[in-house]
Length: 91
Image (cartoon, rainbow, N blue to C red; front, side, top):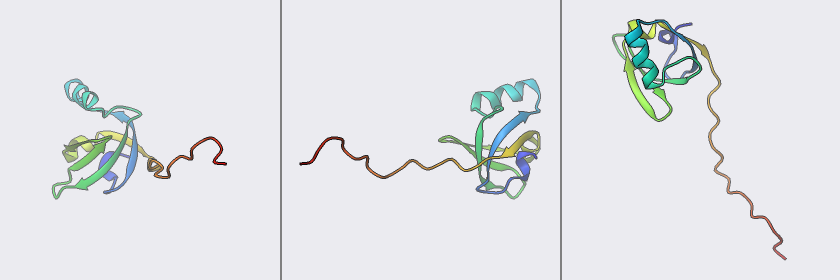
């Protein structure tokens, strides 16, 4: 499936990026490369997407998003907020 088919909140793993060399190179610099995990944050009226890649956010027009092949990915596990127990005896 292509990135354009993912709805807001969807997590995906990039399979391939089928773009011209210069654009593909720029996407690679931004971290959008095979194996990367992305989350669709927002869809624009014109069909473009705002995607999150780690802590970064950037926009892709619909034509570019259609050229990025992805597969569904499980949401990343949230870090545990439970404090770790101290080692040693309390007696």
